[in-house]
Figure (tube, rainbow, N blue to C red):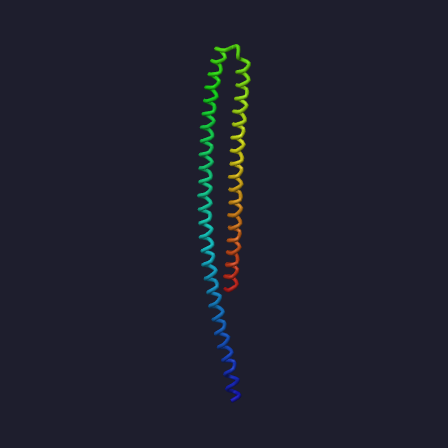
Length: 165
């Protein structure tokens, strides 16, 4: 009886060890599969975010280009209007030399307003460009941060693969 017990106990222990070893390996394989699936989903999410950010940047650039085009058109119109005004003022000066001092004062005031308006438009354009650049910079930082995180997850997966092999 003791001999049978001495032979059965190691066999039982060996069978239990093999069973638990196989269970642990199956759990490890399942965890690897889940981590790989999560990584695929994270990459897809990152790619979608990159695509959306590129689209937003493209729209911001188009908006900026449209704003530049409109400002140039407005500036052309302001210049044309200013040229027309100058011509009319010269004709009026020729007709009424007696009121030339008054007309000179009005011209100076109009030019000051036009310059102030032009300076305001330039300031607003610079602020808009600065805001767009700031948005682009923050988007780049977020993309770099996500890439760093993905790299970290890939390293962990590689370490898990190497550790389990």
